[in-house]
Length: 79
Image (tube, rainbow, N blue to C red; front, top):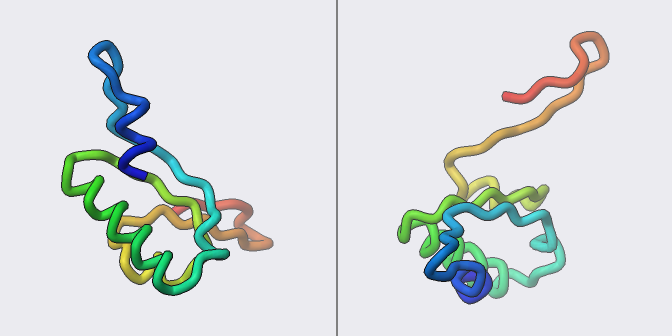
């Protein structure tokens, strides 16, 4: 992740945010831990990383979240 994000940055372009859509559900426990540590390191460097995932372990470790729910009467809602 860090290599991919740093390769997008150059003298003329600085990438400070990134959204990652899934793929984490196929990782084994050790690979998921490694990915989470990489995301935490990027955050500590001031990078903003958005993760789209259904993996329970990730939601337990990520404190700031946007969750989408759907209810029949209310419609779609983000909280």
